[in-house]
Image (cartoon, rainbow, N blue to C red):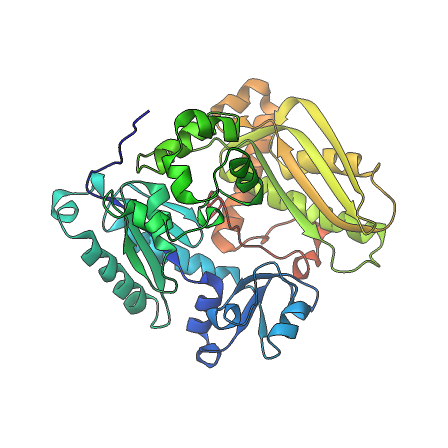
Length: 410
């Protein structure tokens, strides 16, 4: 445990696209610029807002608020259905820009990326990172469009760089060093720190910590007591500028959920939508080179009840048909009526696509060749170019969603 603050030159840059999806829509459609808009995954009054423009946020609109509730605060808000291809395009453009500065960069989500300049070529690492930050801002405007803005934070580690990026939204650029660390933390509340929500704030309050500065000054044993695990040690280090978050996590499960578009769907229609989810999950599973041994189905009903069923297979599987055979069997025991949401998850994942599958017999190897051939066609000509006839017509309802966390599938 290092008690001192990290006094090394700040070499980590966090880039955060401002109100990403809303800004991209304003870039794409000039008439939306300067107007309050809310991005929704389904253009109905009861759907939740996934991103709001700064014009909408200024009038009290928050992420997760239903569109009809947002209209009470902002009557002229414009609901825009999400358009994933646009957002993936900007995601890849940001990746291209970041890759010009370091091979050691990572997208943390579809709208956030981190560059570690410590591993950049000397000609780049030796430059003023504030200058590079403003250069990246200009490149976003030049290479994507004039409405694009981003927040940039520079610090000795990933956590403080992200903290710096949130200090002056929109379009800010801030640097946190060992010299101004206490000054910056003194302006924040506990829940301003990424990773500290109500539950963790309560834990910290229980040991007498009410501000980020008090958290910074706490010793390791106090933080370990608050979090009741090694997490307390991680907080002790990250607040002092030491890196503890440069970690890749193994994929443990793969799934997708869908809120039904109507409470009046027949059982058959619900099964078709479940089958659509299975095909989506199968494609995600194989894109990561994984096989699974378990399938889990979760159902939420309108009376807020939940039902879950699962099945574990003796051998690994990966094809849509194998997943669907298990999912359909599990769903037979689900509630008969009042279903609001369905989800399917594959679990007990392992690396398996490739030569290893031949160990389980020629039939499985042949299934792999056919399945991957279909994936290649869908990858070349567009998702669901080839799909089960059973899911015909479900694509207008079960639309692709944009992941806010992991970028594995982008």
